Length: 424
Image 1 (cartoon, rainbow, N blue to C red):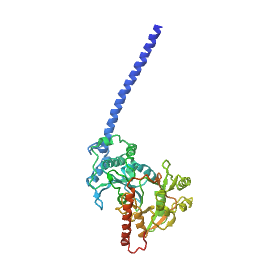
Image 2 (image 1 turned 60 degrees about the vertical axis):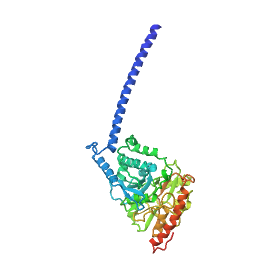
Image 3 (image 1 turned 90 degrees about the vertical axis):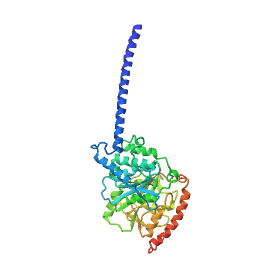
Image 4 (image 1 turned 90 degrees about the horizontal axis):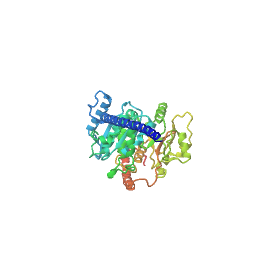
C-alpha cells in the first residue's frame, strides 16, 4: 500500500504543478491585460483631453471638436443681464446643425443630467440643454458634457450644450484632471459617472446657498436654437413618442395662427413605472392611478385648466394624427407646458428657485393675446410623483419672495401691453 500511496502522491504533484503553471500563466495574462487596459485608458484620456498634438492623424474631426470647445471656453462666456451669472452659449454644438422646425429646450444641474439619456431616446431630434454648475461642478460639468458629446453618437448629432455658472466662476478646459475622468471609455461609462453624482443635491438645493436660475436657463436653452418652434420642459420630463414628426405633420396640414401655443397635458408617474409612449398607454395607467395630473398634490389648480377629464375622454381618431382637441381660456394660476413659436416672450429672469417662474410667462402670453390650444394625443410625463415634504427647507420663503416679485411683474405687464384688455 506504500507503493500505491506514492503513486497517488506523484499524480497529485503533477496535477498541482499543472495548476500552478495555469495560475502563473493567468497572472502573466492578467498583468498584460491591465497594462494594455492602462494603455487604452491613457489613449482614451489623451484622445479626450490631450493636447491637439495627440494622434494628429488619428481623429482629425475629434480634434476639431476639442479645438471648438477650447475656443468657446477661451471667450470667457458672456454675463447675463443681472451680471450675476456667466453664460457659455453653445459650449458644444451638435454635429449636424440643420435648421430645424422644432427643438426641445431643457435645463438642469449636473446632478440631474443623467435624465438626458432617456429624454433623448424618446425625443430623437434636436435638443438644446442649459446646465447650471457651481464651484467644483463647473469643471466636472465641462468635462462630462464634452465626454458625452465625444462618446455618444446620438448626443453628438443632436444636442447643443450651454453652461451657466456664477459670474465669479470661470470654466476651463479639463486638461489636468486625469483622476476625475479615468474610467470614461464609452457612452455608458459617462452616464454611470453621472448617476453616481445624482444624489448630491435635492431639487434646487444647491450647496453654498446658491440660487438655481431656472428662467435664465430656459432662456439660454431657447435662444440657443434657431428653430421656428420650441418645446421647453424640465429634464426629468419625457414627451409622448414621435411628437416631433406628428407636430410637423400637423402644422404642414394647417398653418397655425401666429399667436397660438399648443398645450401638452402634463402628468406624473409612479417612480418604478415605464413611461407610456402613446395616449392609449397613458390613459390605461391613469385609470389605475399609476399616472396622475402633474402637481396634483402640490398645486392642483396650477394644472387644472388643462381639463384632464375632457382630454382623457376625448378619443383620438384612429388615424393617429395629431390635432387640436379644444382651446382653453387662460385662468390664474395655470402654467401649461406647450410647443410655441420661438418668438413667444422670454421668461422673466428675476424669478429663481421655487415658485412663479413658469406662471409669470404664461400670464404674459395671455396678456399678449396668445391662444392656448390643447393637443389631442400628445403629452409630457414627469418621472415620479411630486409629494409634500420632499422639498428643500427654504422652499416656502422662496415662494414668498417670488410672490412679491410676481405682483410687480403683473403691474409691469400693464405698461408693456397697454392696448391689451387682458389682466392676470
